[in-house]
Length: 422
Image 1 (cartoon, rainbow, N blue to C red):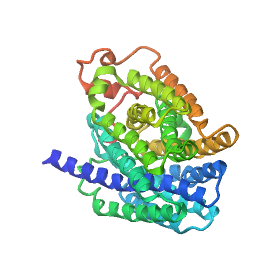
Image 2 (cartoon, rainbow, N blue to C red):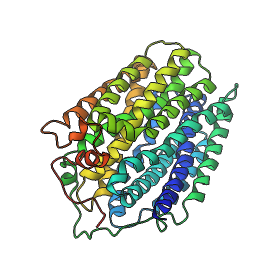
Image 3 (cartoon, one colour):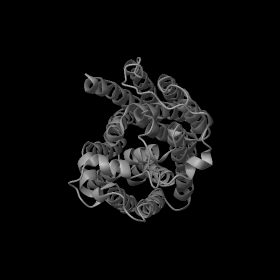
Image 4 (tube, one colour):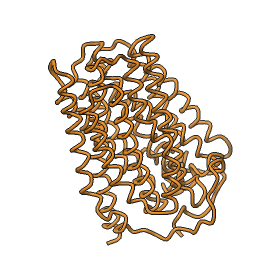
């Protein structure tokens, strides 16, 4: 009965995340196409994509603090409403400034949903379930990223790019609203355990100094920046290379499908390679593939490149969530996740804006070279984080139990009781 209840709340969360992320993934390329139709250049597209992350950049930590000392569930419907409104209003906006504003509202809604959902998984999963549950949770995001671009590509076409992209944004808003149907009393039905009392807030500097937190933040930032710039700039690359929007949508969905496949086999990959080797290898390979997109390769070559890239990018997000949750001090896990999301949003502000400047000066494909460098740095950080005596024999022995390496990895020198389980 307990296992069935556990699967029930997690499944509903995955479904809701799928609709919410699908709306965002449909809206992001639609915003780019609509901006281009309204006269935007590469720099303007980069600015609009960056504004999506600007409001969340300042709101993440306060929301995380609130969630550490309260419930997670109220953030979920609030996030869905903001996503739906941001999508729909972006479709009716008649100026680039208005599009940037509603793009920011969409990003704020996505942040609210993700903080609430990640905190719910961290709070209601046992330590041995966290790798699996975070992996399954992020399948919802990958499903949305799979369907969203295809739907956008199917709706955007013909000579009237402004009108068809507006329709895609309105459809995305309606799709986001469907997520509300899966969120009814989702926290009450979960097998929640009592959380320890907290007398004072843990300082942000204390959280950031905890071994494992900075590495998790950087890896997550790099992976999300790669996904975000890929979503926003592959349409621009497609315009320059004469690739139809429908084909661009299929290419983005191939990347998302490979990410889903990765997360379905994440547990056996962890048993086989260990956390450090898996993170380092996938970040390194993703760096090479991102740089390869800048080359004038044909569409038939882009498809397998994006498939392997999507598989590699699928590792970083769930493992960085687990690493940050286990490394964070007691009573500050939602805040640590919020700091991780702040790093994500910082990357989403800086990466598209920097991509716009580079694309305007050098070419539309040049930003992918910068992403390759960022992922290469993350591979080094993932490898360096394992320096020192290993406390995880399972890193080299695939036969050891998964829970041993899951508990020992990511916590650094701070051993203790399972987080937030009483």
